[in-house]
Amino acid sequence: MSHDDFVLGYQNGRLGSSVSTILILQLFFAGRIRERRVAVSLGCWALGLLFLIGLAGLAFLRIPAPWAILGTIITFAVFLLGFSHHLSGFVVCAALTNKQFYELAKSQHALCLTTDGESNLPELPKVVPMQPSRRAQR
Image 1 (tube, helix red, strand yellow):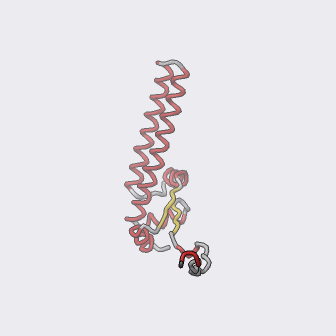
Image 2 (cartoon, rainbow, N blue to C red):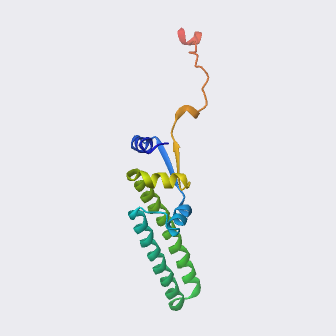
Image 3 (cartoon, rainbow, N blue to C red):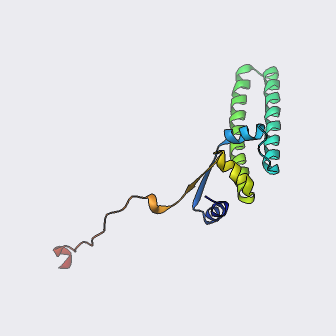
């Protein structure tokens, strides 16, 4: 799918996208992502992760271990959900505005696209109108 088709399909709402967070992180740490917005966003999230790790270490020193473990699990779960949602939005936005980034993400299978084409739906049988019953005619 070309970049113009991607943009048009996204604007029409007939295109679904899926972003592989792990592949985007691999591309980021390998230095292959040149898109500044995505790289800055990933850097900020990495700093946030370091902050959460430090906060969890401080929690283990200050509060009882069961509460620290529970708080750490909940905090990291919320962090990971927010991270994956935010990163997916940034990747799709960058792919919409930058053709080179779109080609990189598509070729590395970090961005998967699905069309909402109705050609793959099963064919319905031909509908034949029913004759009204004789009782309904009386």
